Image (tube, rainbow, N blue to C red; front, side, top):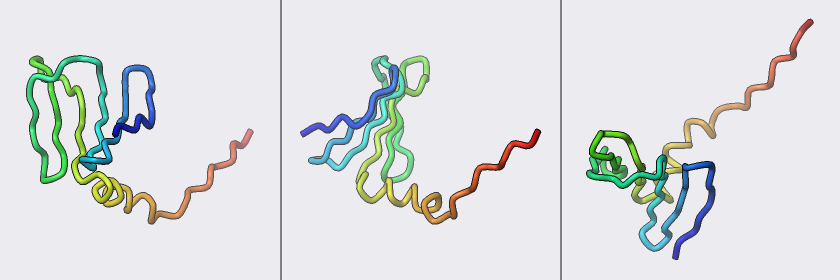
Length: 83
């Protein structure tokens, strides 16, 4: 099952629940090779080494771990513009 959660111009974000993988496709080009970064991320590149997509493995845990420092911060209030 594929859940398409967002699409903005060429960037596409898809979640594959059966594999618990989140894929961020940055450009619409064919990847040539991938490079594993840590245990939970694979970066896919073209022959010209342009980043095509980011694959996050064990996404249900990994995304929360990545966002936890941001979510634990207090919201910043917008500064008022003074004339």
